[in-house]
Image (cartoon, rainbow, N blue to C red):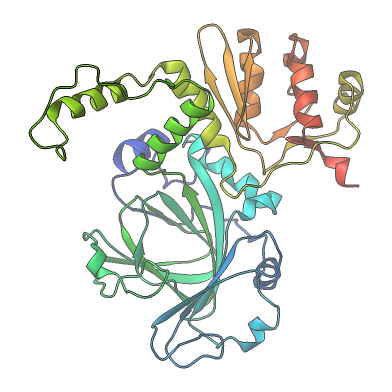
Length: 399
């Protein structure tokens, strides 16, 4: 498979030399790319309930849509918006952002297939941003990897590897924008060009005329959040002890208010007894990385199909698609394969491994591709179950 990397660069070389190490400009990454969204369609999405949207306005002058504009250099507003807002916006220096657009635009979901040199469970979402001339979200830094694909017009990107401290950020606004920024490198991206940025790189993109950018971002949960999530999982699964703190060897101490080394040692021993085995980690992690961050979930079929009825449709040539509300991942174990779909875990037999890999690797499925796999016991029933639960759907289901 061809990847959107510079000519002569392999996926292995990119991972070794650039991934989470240094930026990479990729001219003509998608030379025939045509944006599937127009600015008007993006504005329409920002008016819909349930779609996460934001509007960032650089306050160069008093604006009717920017409260306290005389005090704040930037304004952030959250959607959904009234369509009349867009007629009130200034002619320049604002940006409209929509999260998780791959859920609503199949062509964008297919774009993710080009990034299969990165594990799919690491992919977070595709965000689209539209800006008129001068539009920006300010110089800022993210703690995750991102590929910035220019979909319409041009944008100037400036970057820096300088350290960022809390005092460097503009206060009083819910945006992590730097008050001062000195660029180390600068590029102008045209349609089809792409810029890769590892975590921690300051970047500042400014639209040169009407501009539309697709940002392919990757999940990077904070370690403290992962630990908290894992402990919560152990508690929910009743894997933690229900015993209470005990100190039958308590001795008289001169200061009642002192927490003694002996008490701290007892606490340390309680924490160290927390179960930490490979199965618990696998079961928890597979569930958590396939959960929807926005809480979206699929709806089961109103009229579930039998395996026979499902297979009849599949073999008649109907294309089977993965619902973009559902994330898929798997873990191969010696005696079983764990399939994770939208936070749910299925423990399946090793004989089904190839089918599970295909489910997790591909978004689109045909009966011809599955011909040999469907001869394996359990595979047809699994597809049918995922279809009935809403994680898969046929092309014709919307007709």
